[in-house]
Length: 305
Image (cartoon, rainbow, N blue to C red; front, side, top):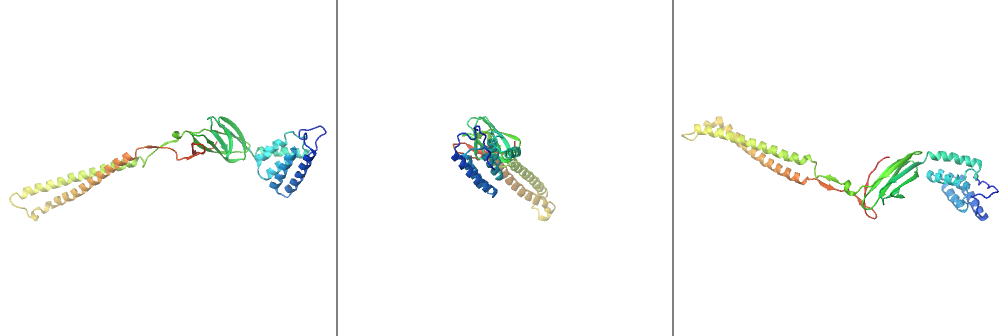
């Protein structure tokens, strides 16, 4: 993990660097290397960063890449690798340069590219909680493969949260467009649309049965009265004289009771159905959303691109 020696001609990574800065960088680099060999990658990374702060040499930068890879921070590793290779092979030892090129190919397949586009003026877009752009814009971000969350916000519009699946080595495009609250409104009813009509119709059915029973009761009663009129014209009839038609009287009485009850129940059901039809009129309901900072509202959507 040594730093390559610069040529006699001034090089960009050497120009303006003092001996004191070089000494500080070498000391920090040695400390980082010791920690790295001890598998203390996070502590080694801090030493490498301090070394680069003293002397921004590509070879020191490459040690940052090594530590970040061990820490599975591949996007940061790729960013630092790009800086380490900014001057090509010149500032690096041959073996280090070959290793850097190998890492470049490896990281290319472990990092996804997310292209975020939006056209609505003033919409602010964040990626995993970090600002990406203020629309209209088209921004590209390198991300680790997997699920990521894009959120667009603007006062007066519904905040949109979109889940994006990034794939290593392949670009993914996500277009953000926010909707107005009224466009997300829906028509809501107290009950399913068929229910009031079922109650209403059932009421008419029961009332109809009650009416038929009432008519049947009247018919049986009229038949019984006709027999009485024929048999009892001169004197009052005894029960034995009317025994053969007593069933008509009993039937009329029972049917009258049932018919009356059915009419009452059916009428109540009809009234209930009518009230339900009135109460079940559609009403416009807007999304139950939470306010966001600066105004506006939020509704969560998800989709894959």
